Image 1 (tube, rainbow, N blue to C red):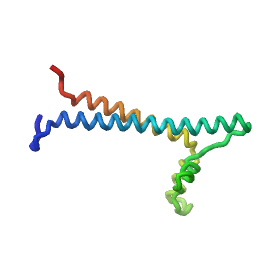
Image 2: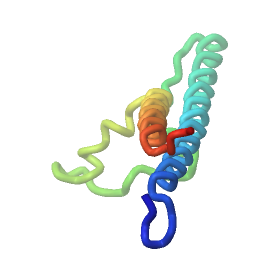
Image 3: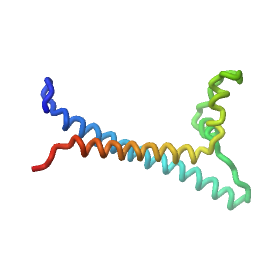
Image 4: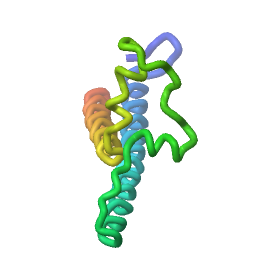
Length: 120
Protein backbone atom coordinates (compact mmCIF):
# COMPACT_ATOMS: atom_id res chain seq x y z
CA UNK A 1 0.00 0.00 0.00
CA UNK A 2 1.50 3.32 -1.07
CA UNK A 3 1.09 6.44 0.99
CA UNK A 4 0.73 9.96 -0.35
CA UNK A 5 4.47 10.58 -0.28
CA UNK A 6 5.20 7.52 -2.38
CA UNK A 7 6.62 5.20 0.25
CA UNK A 8 5.46 1.67 0.60
CA UNK A 9 4.16 1.68 4.18
CA UNK A 10 4.58 -2.07 4.73
CA UNK A 11 8.19 -2.00 3.57
CA UNK A 12 8.92 1.06 5.72
CA UNK A 13 7.47 -0.60 8.82
CA UNK A 14 9.40 -3.76 8.03
CA UNK A 15 12.69 -1.83 7.69
CA UNK A 16 12.10 0.10 10.91
CA UNK A 17 11.33 -3.17 12.72
CA UNK A 18 14.54 -4.69 11.32
CA UNK A 19 16.52 -1.69 12.58
CA UNK A 20 14.90 -1.89 16.02
CA UNK A 21 15.67 -5.63 16.14
CA UNK A 22 19.30 -5.03 15.23
CA UNK A 23 19.72 -2.27 17.84
CA UNK A 24 17.94 -4.32 20.53
CA UNK A 25 20.18 -7.35 19.92
CA UNK A 26 23.29 -5.13 19.89
CA UNK A 27 22.25 -3.41 23.12
CA UNK A 28 21.29 -6.69 24.81
CA UNK A 29 24.69 -8.14 23.92
CA UNK A 30 26.62 -5.23 25.43
CA UNK A 31 24.35 -5.09 28.47
CA UNK A 32 24.88 -8.81 29.10
CA UNK A 33 28.63 -8.41 28.68
CA UNK A 34 28.66 -5.63 31.29
CA UNK A 35 26.68 -7.87 33.67
CA UNK A 36 29.11 -10.72 33.08
CA UNK A 37 32.06 -8.40 33.65
CA UNK A 38 30.64 -7.37 37.03
CA UNK A 39 30.04 -11.01 37.98
CA UNK A 40 33.57 -11.92 36.89
CA UNK A 41 35.01 -9.14 39.03
CA UNK A 42 32.94 -10.27 42.03
CA UNK A 43 33.85 -13.95 41.61
CA UNK A 44 37.54 -13.14 41.16
CA UNK A 45 37.51 -10.97 44.28
CA UNK A 46 35.67 -13.69 46.19
CA UNK A 47 38.19 -16.37 45.15
CA UNK A 48 41.19 -14.19 46.01
CA UNK A 49 39.97 -12.71 49.30
CA UNK A 50 37.25 -15.08 50.46
CA UNK A 51 34.82 -12.16 50.85
CA UNK A 52 31.91 -11.49 48.51
CA UNK A 53 31.85 -7.82 47.57
CA UNK A 54 28.36 -6.65 46.61
CA UNK A 55 28.10 -4.19 43.76
CA UNK A 56 24.84 -2.24 43.80
CA UNK A 57 23.24 0.06 41.25
CA UNK A 58 24.21 3.08 43.35
CA UNK A 59 27.88 2.03 43.26
CA UNK A 60 27.68 1.61 39.48
CA UNK A 61 26.16 5.07 39.14
CA UNK A 62 28.92 6.55 41.29
CA UNK A 63 31.56 4.99 38.99
CA UNK A 64 29.95 6.62 35.97
CA UNK A 65 29.89 10.00 37.71
CA UNK A 66 26.14 9.97 38.24
CA UNK A 67 24.70 10.10 41.71
CA UNK A 68 21.39 9.22 43.24
CA UNK A 69 18.75 11.96 43.05
CA UNK A 70 19.36 14.62 45.67
CA UNK A 71 15.89 14.79 47.15
CA UNK A 72 14.79 14.54 50.75
CA UNK A 73 13.76 11.45 52.63
CA UNK A 74 10.17 12.58 53.15
CA UNK A 75 7.53 9.87 52.99
CA UNK A 76 6.43 10.85 49.49
CA UNK A 77 9.83 11.80 48.04
CA UNK A 78 11.12 10.17 44.87
CA UNK A 79 14.34 9.10 46.56
CA UNK A 80 12.54 7.28 49.34
CA UNK A 81 10.16 5.53 46.94
CA UNK A 82 12.97 4.28 44.68
CA UNK A 83 15.73 3.82 47.27
CA UNK A 84 15.25 0.05 47.08
CA UNK A 85 16.18 0.15 43.37
CA UNK A 86 19.60 1.66 44.10
CA UNK A 87 20.34 -1.19 46.51
CA UNK A 88 19.71 -3.93 43.92
CA UNK A 89 22.71 -5.84 42.50
CA UNK A 90 23.94 -4.11 39.35
CA UNK A 91 24.51 -7.38 37.50
CA UNK A 92 20.92 -8.50 38.17
CA UNK A 93 19.54 -5.19 36.90
CA UNK A 94 21.72 -5.44 33.77
CA UNK A 95 20.53 -8.99 33.07
CA UNK A 96 16.90 -7.90 33.55
CA UNK A 97 17.43 -5.04 31.08
CA UNK A 98 19.06 -7.47 28.63
CA UNK A 99 16.01 -9.77 28.92
CA UNK A 100 13.69 -6.85 28.16
CA UNK A 101 15.83 -5.94 25.13
CA UNK A 102 15.68 -9.53 23.88
CA UNK A 103 11.88 -9.46 24.24
CA UNK A 104 11.88 -6.23 22.22
CA UNK A 105 13.99 -7.91 19.53
CA UNK A 106 11.55 -10.83 19.37
CA UNK A 107 8.64 -8.41 19.05
CA UNK A 108 10.46 -6.47 16.31
CA UNK A 109 11.14 -9.72 14.46
CA UNK A 110 7.45 -10.56 14.60
CA UNK A 111 6.52 -7.12 13.26
CA UNK A 112 9.17 -7.35 10.55
CA UNK A 113 7.82 -10.73 9.44
CA UNK A 114 4.24 -9.50 9.51
CA UNK A 115 4.91 -6.45 7.32
CA UNK A 116 7.53 -7.88 4.96
CA UNK A 117 6.48 -8.23 1.35
CA UNK A 118 5.71 -11.78 0.29
CA UNK A 119 8.28 -13.21 -2.08
CA UNK A 120 7.06 -14.49 -5.42
